[in-house]
Image 1: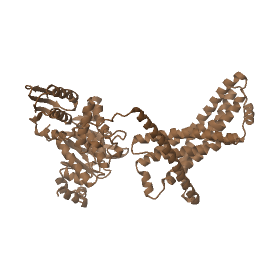
Image 2 (image 1 turned 90 degrees about the vertical axis):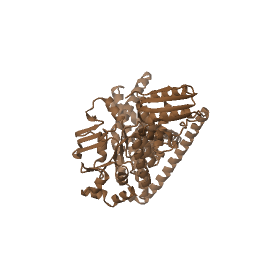
Image 3 (image 1 turned 90 degrees about the horizontal axis):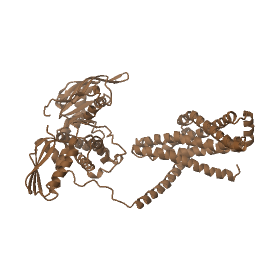
Image 4 (image 1 turned 60 degrees about the vertical axis):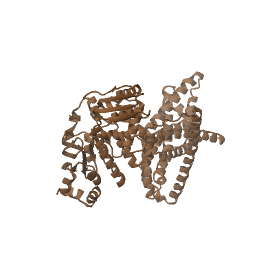
Length: 260
Length: 377
């Protein structure tokens, strides 16, 4: 558990495409246990495609994806697959809360489906998760349509964390939040990652997030991962894309925010 | 790793509880029993030490259960403390310590009769407000129609034709087929029962009048409400959910003019046309059954039909059609605009659009029957 370089996700030579277009072209990437990996790239570069391929929503054309040392695509046994799926949680970009369920029911949904627990314990755990993501108990009977964007993200995070996963996938967690809300959400992710010992795979565009919480950053350009490493490596790089992304006007602002 | 367990030792006053093994979600159901039992057994203990030194793994479920055990003692006034807590688990335990104690509020028990009355009242108010909304949309539509008459260039012809193709042209096969079958079934039943009196010939009268005055237009309206009314509601509803209608408004466009008018206009043209086609198909079905099953010749059927019906019989059905179309279109659009944020609301409104429009079409048909009887048509 404490081996620092144990890869919980390892992607090897992954090729994904739609029709004639190749979106991911021989992508190789590791996510190590206990780290927050920020995954960046231009709009439409295929960041979300990689995320969706790892969690099994898109089929790869070639290459392999191992999660916890098991290659899911080769897995014929549904039970093993479900056991692995239980060990990750996904925060979708729009939250993807079930609109016909209340906040409490949304968080309880995975618990109810996967574990046989007493109603009292399920209620208490849902309350604990809600507290962890920094929401008051009085939102629990509200429906997603009654929540603000920031609250939806928090509830969705609570749902992703409902089963105490080891890996959390975040698809642009701070998009659509105001800078204060985004900073709070970053801090929340960092706190939860430390408390729960999570490995985090975070697709993001938010330079503040990259500076503030990511241990390592992977950059996707033209369907390939062109660089991985901590933010200092990115800032020091001479690659034109990295220069314009991290050292452009907005990039410098992000750095100032993070080190104020 | 050891399996999870909770062992207690000590005399009545001082108790040491040793927590061992893996306290995670998988075993949470068993662990809950363990802690409840321990809390009961050592209910009299004054000082409780919960020893976590032999804990192998902990997640939120386990941490919460330990916290719950802790609270079970402290709430009775005993002193409980956690010892041997590792640095790794400390954060988690401190996190769950912040959780409020109060259990989720269950709805207070209310009088069932009051609840039923409340539901009835709300349903009545709902019917009232939906009629108001219908009138509102009808008014808004009238204003838009008058505006369009004044400036015919504002008329959205392409959109109207597009909707006409969807609700009219593409509905032709299914409508012709259903009405054909209905006509044939009515004729067959008529012949079967009228034969007992030797009155098969009057089946033609019955089919002719029934189809042209009532059945043709009603069947078409039911089909159109189910096929096109529901589609209108779902389209407008999902546009409302994704703020597309608000976007139209902010661009200075009137959603009634852009979205509602072309749709209702398409229905106003399509429903009478479909009613005509449907009535003809039903008569053809009846004629086929009369010749094949009733033993009439086509000439006799046609002669009898000519004697039984006159132009107003046909006109009654056709006059009703546009009014029915208006009702279906208005109900569908009102329901679409009333969709709220959730997917469930979209489903509810679509169902209610179909049910309401079919119901209103039948009610309207009743009024028309009285009206035409009064004026002798």
